[in-house]
Amino acid sequence: MLKRIFVLILFSINLYCTKNLTFSKTIFISNFENEKPSNLTINNIYGQLKDSKIFYFNRSKVIGPLNNNSINVYIDSLPDHNILEINFDLYIHDNWQGNKINSNGMPDLFAIKVNDEPKFFTTFSNDASYNQSFPEWFPNGQNPIKSNSLDIALPGLCYSRNNKNGTTMYSIKKSFPNTDKSVVVSISDALQPYNSSCEKSWSIDNIKIVAFRYF
Image (cartoon, rainbow, N blue to C red; front, side):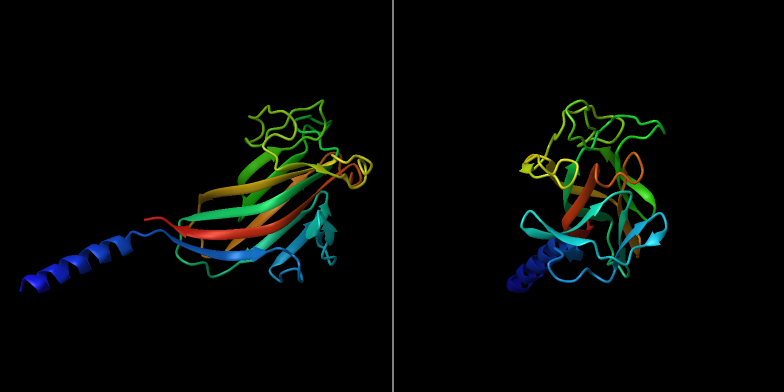
């Protein structure tokens, strides 16, 4: 009898602990070393691009260089979750000017959205004349150029192609509440002025999106 009671107690404790474990599932991952995933598109103001925009940078295949573009990841049939986490490596090429407000009232803005809902707006600067918002939201941050960067010793692509420090690398990780059964994760820019791709651009690598269920 005592043995049976002991077994029941152990079973109840194990059931309670298992019930409250955090659940996580990777719902999208790509390093772009193979073909571009079919559920990832690259768009401009006119629609979807046919070009995969994959090229070699920093000894790896990346998507870019991009200017006034969006990368969109489409994910259906998500598991039961309450948090989404987005991770990727970001390369800021050439002459980004951070919090500088241009003639149209906009800075060099970088954005992350989920189902068209803003999740992060920020700015980056490679120009010592202008601060950047990152790692904070724009317009709150007034941080020195290249703040919280992972690598500053990377060459520029076009405007700063002769500068061995012309590209700055960041590791981006953002998480936020979400319970949607399907999502479109959008990573985009509003670089100023429009169509300034030689002056400034960006690329990304190693995208990973994880769904968490916290009890």
